[in-house]
Length: 376
Ligand code: F6P
Image 1: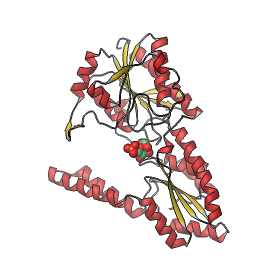
Image 2: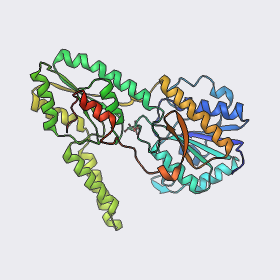
Image 3: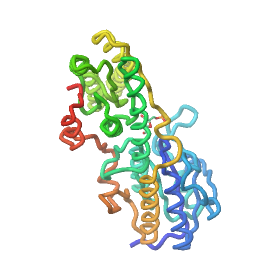
């Protein structure tokens, strides 16, 4: 077993999410006051690690941040092994090792989503003592039941859908509420169910405009001349889903540099052609139902601001448990929530994997049972 770490680095990477500061605080208070460690925070995620930009995290710096949104350290979306400097892509793992050695850092705690888990695995493979903590409003990190940020975003998206009901009802309109979630439908599905959306569209269930139209027309025939649709940002119709899958397969199976370049160009074209798909769907529904249709993109309000109580609890639990792990010398893991337990999972078991909504998931069955259309 490794010796107990005394000087620890922490960073936040990827999109910000409510609860990042609560984790920094939970980790820092336990590490400093309980275990007598020293803590430094790298600024702006991987950028700070590479460029050696950091701040000392003293008890004073950790005070008053439990409830604050964003991250006191700043964040970025860089990849440590494909780091872009002046338009050139470089592997910066050697540089990071040098910086950590010069700073006498014994362990690194990395708060982030799927991309950060991959970065953590790269650093772990290079011999750095790493622990990754699951942050994302998307809830798509493989190996953990949930991630901090998700509960808050779910509350915000649910409130938004609640509010859209009365305006859709008053104007006899269709309103599409586009919810974040990247390629996973957790946030759209959860907020759609909790907010009582009439239709929920998620990436895991490609939709047809005909099915969505049929649900709206049935509602009209029952006297409901309005509909609220929760659209996960990754949701696509059947054709667009097939086009995207085929384009991605071409990239994954390209055998030569030329074919890879061509496949990437094709994929970029497909991605581009599917931009603003929620607006396209709105136009299609307006034409097919005769109801005036509007789009509300919930966007960054879902991940800004103060974390809800559930996320504060989860974040504090993750932070304190991570400090225990550092003290024990247990590294190379993602800290995962499993029910009420917080368990270390080897990075090699989770890196590069995505947690999508299983199509037999209880939430999907729940939505169907209350009569919510899923566009199938
Ligand atoms: O991963 C969190 C998330 O908010 C996704 O839901 C969304 O697709 C993405 O980040 C937006 O990324 P950016 O901050 O780069 O616009």
